[in-house]
Image (cartoon, rainbow over all chains, first blue to last red; front, side, top):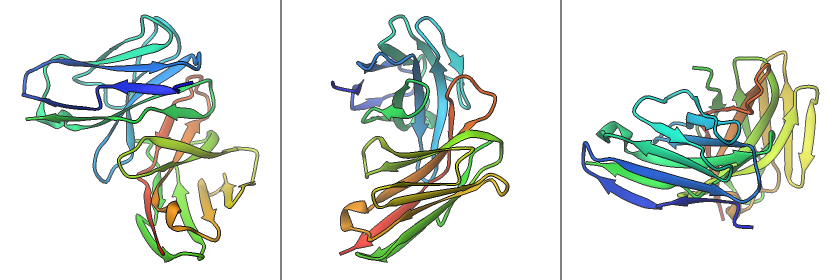
Length: 110
Length: 113
């Protein structure tokens, strides 16, 4: 099992550009999450999903959109990137208890 | 924000010593979890303690939970250089059916060889 994978690992964007981060899990988990981690802070929840076809807002959803068209995939989109979205993004999946994390995507917005 | 807080923010000890990290939170919980993050990596689950449990052990890890004080502690015994990492507590709030976790700001542990 690969667990939770994220693509890409690194990305540099210019202000106003768009991009999609892909998260995939092979554990058949119902729950999936997107977090961002900034220096000196813990993880903050952006959006999450409790099952295929469902999404919900987390603590810091503004500027992001998500989709869960397939159970194993959870996509995070930035429609118009801003420097404030420079961060490390982590995806996680869960069966209702422990969360399993991907390796992260380091995004820089210039 | 319902974010928890860890104490201390940073801890430096010698190999072989014990390390204790504390976590405080604000809401009633179903469970509290501890995660570890090596530099530049994703988080790895260490241990989960339910709200009706007071203490739990896993190898060199000991976790306590005091729901009356809304606090938890993580003890790592006989520390090793490989234990150097950031440690986060995360709470699963009571009443939620989404398994959402609220993470603390973390304790950075440095174990000197």
